[in-house]
Structure formats: C-alpha cells, structure tokens
Length: 164
Image 1 (tube, helix red, strand yellow):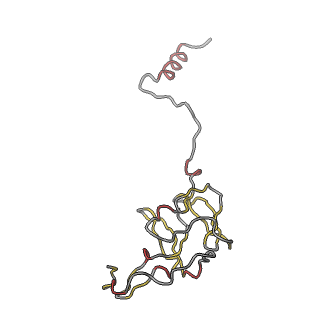
Image 2: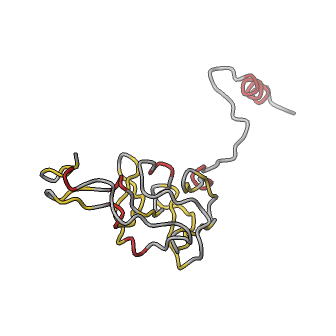
Image 3: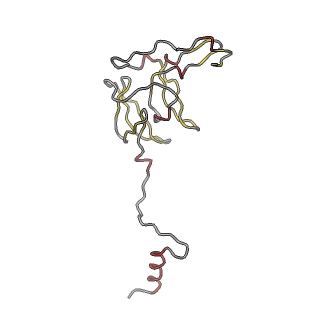
C-alpha cells in the first residue's frame, strides 16, 4: 500500500508546487571537458591535432580551459596562420603564430620588429595575450608563404620606449 505522504510528495514534485522546482535530467555534465580549442577562429575537438609552423599541436585542457600542447615536428600546416595580430581571441592558449607589425615595440628610441619572434597565446586575468616565445627561426614557413623580413613601421615612431 502506498502511503498518502508519498502520493502528496509525488504530486508536489510533478506540479512544481510548494516553491520547489523539479529537475528532469539528473545527469551532470562538465562542459569544460567538451570545450573545443580555437585555431584562427575554428574550433577543434579535444584530442585533435593540427600542424602549424613545422610543429604538431594537440588540443587538451589545463587549469584555465582549452589549451594547445606543442609536440614534435610536423609537415606542412593544415590550419590557417594569420600571424600574431589583434585577434588573439581566435586562438586558445598554447597556440603559436609568427609575429606581425602588431607585435612591434620600442626599447628607448629603438624599434623592435615583431616579425623577428614567434608569439604564444597565454592566459592572463583579462583573457589572452600574445607573448614572445622565441625567435621566428623556430617557425617553418610553408612553401609559397613569404616571411616578412622587417616591420612597415619606422624607428621614428619610437620615443622614450613608447610606440607612437
């Protein structure tokens, strides 16, 4: 025999009465585990691998979210490589790109061209930023892609360490 209290509880849950709401699905999902890694704005599922600049990158997770882990050598790039420009948000942490004019900076009155470095997307408290990860000699440019040899900016744009 079913007790009246059990029937009342079932009725209350079914109607959402007494200020309680019901949950129709008790499965718990951690969407972070399904989070895709971004490369030039395109999502790649966890565990997938891309080739860029002569290196293989595998999509995984770290404490901050989706992350590209750099592996061994790889052949020609199979993803777009627009360079480290304003669109760092189109990449997940760990992605690397050759430098562009966007990455130029000044030391005193000397212009340091961004095209001389490879930059990595790194997490900060405000999102991602491009951080120098080494010389551009670490990047293998695909056949037909011409590496910029210098900045389009001039040294006259540097004043007391500031790029004007």
